[in-house]
Length: 507
Image (tube, rainbow, N blue to C red; front, top):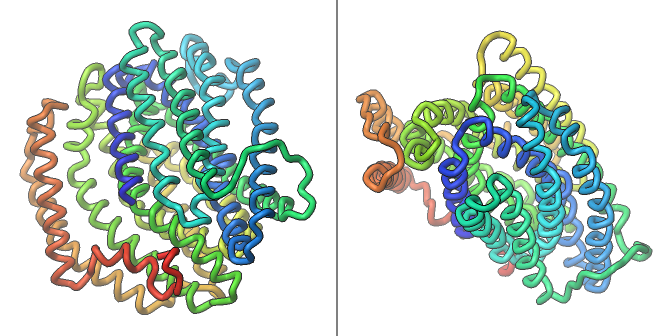
């Protein structure tokens, strides 16, 4: 969690640097749009699909003690990943302009710029996908620090590269820095993994390993992730047809709400998934229900106050962090508006994603894939209906939120033999307590919001940063005091991840 916190904060700094250097106009829209292509495909070849398919497999192999099989499987996966990416990078270079033209509603100048950026961004995707394999194996061995520290290197390289290389290379400084950051992130995770005996080497024959079972699981998860990628591409396509600055507002708002979401969900899900996979392999159904219920309760305890604080301080946060250089106050207000739409559904999104992890831990990849595809089709349909109805850019977060809630309900029914939150009385009472405990901070921030303070309009400076930090700290202390009164021990959440597991390494 601490590693992810540092990574997300650096991500915000990276966003600020990009906003300061490239602004929020047509050039920034092209950068954000083009970078979103490999960033979405990370779900196919990187973090999403890799973790969901690899962690259960390597966790099960760890239980059976098949060290040589694990190491062969690792070499096979790395080899096939590299083979897969050779044609992808070549295609992204040869047909670069056509790909950008197909996926966007940009003019000719923007298409050419996007084409120049696409191939380096796809090369970055190769390295980040290898890093995801390394990270997934590390997590299966309960080595979370190394896995979650690695994104820090990417942000540091991009921030440094954009600031120092832009005067000479212009927009291409972003491409150069992105590739360099991906290489460094992959190198760090690989060196960490070597200590567990894993080595990258050419391997093509999977006999004697669960390669095909893992690839089948990976393929099924990737199909679901592909649906998410297509939905994101459609989302950005809709945004590119809206007024200038909409794509940048969408990209920046996603970074803001993904900061608390990533810190808390990634940490809890990362620790829970290996435990759930090993519990399913051992037939410990009661343990599965306890771990999942605790994970959902912990997510709510952390994400609900995060949502409230960031919702009421959205304009202040965006303006203080991003409003500088070419990034105007109007751009900050638009970003804050989109951010609020996503924040409304942050906790339901985490619940939906956690239930998917439960299904993956039980190797129900086919069922999870069908549900994910259906949820994304609904998301696209709702976006179209809302935009057609004149809702504008808020159609994007609203469609995603509504489809996510329906997906969570469906998962709760489909996975009821493992665990169903809809009939978990303990979870329901915990959620009620969390809601009541957050009433004081909600009321306090509601009063502040309606007082009409405008100090943030001057944008990014040290004074405004100090004011924002003071408001955030005060709100957080109010939440902590309220949680203490309601006996919701935030400090115990980290400890609870290992309760009842009977495995100190997992704890």
